Length: 115
Length: 115
DNA sequence: CGTACTGTTCGATGACTGTCGACATAAGGA
DNA sequence: TCCTTATGTCGACAGTCATCGAACAGTACG
Image (cartoon, rainbow over all chains, first blue to last red; front, top):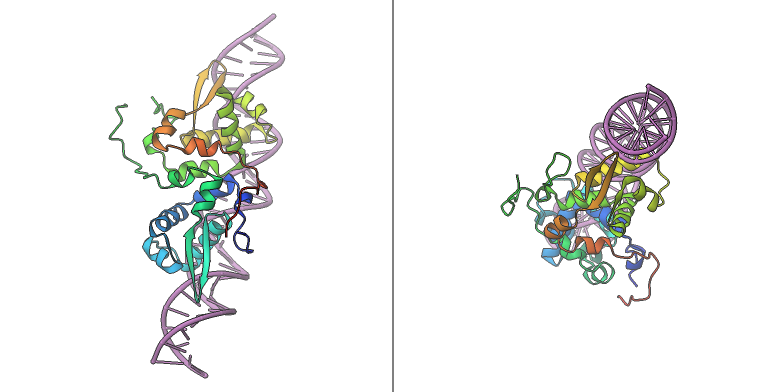
């Protein structure tokens, strides 16, 4: 099962949980970066994301993402290998990961003809 | 146009904004209910959603949904007709509305076979 | 005009949350 | 064993947020 005490079974995850976890720019960036990396240790993800927050804060975000069912942690010696729970998420919320991967350019108004 | 000072142009809306707006159970319920109604006055939506919060609180949530680009308000006499900004959202975040419409049964564990 | 209906705005309040720094734990190497 | 690296936990603090009630504003109707 998914439930090893640290990762919630995907069936118990709600959209509110997921949206709440992704509502923070740091966490959304982390998820996107991790999606690009496939899987990586915390520290690699931390650096790859180019975050300026402290390690303890990152650990806090990581916990929220894990408890929201978005990421998986595999213990490998002294490090935790992180990965997106792709299969689980695709089965429970089809299309969600595609939406997350959407490039969001805040001022990309080139295709509009509005006032 | 979308930009009448009350509704943000859809290009300026970010995923963080949208996820933040949908992170609250009341607002997620409101959006889902409104999606089912098509369009309706605030009060009808309020009652249809079966909410127990006060009107002023609902008005607060409504404002957040509007400013996040999720809903549109059309003034019709003494009432505001609410509707989902379906076309805008489909073009900016394809698949998002489908994800929102996902039925979320918290204890539906019939399809899992994960490691 | 006055009453009812619809919806917003304001101030206060309690809860939640992101952040930090300091400390703890665990593994690996010199 | 000691030191370094990797990561989590704890306590504190400041900022944000959901909620309420009361007051306010616009419209419809008699």
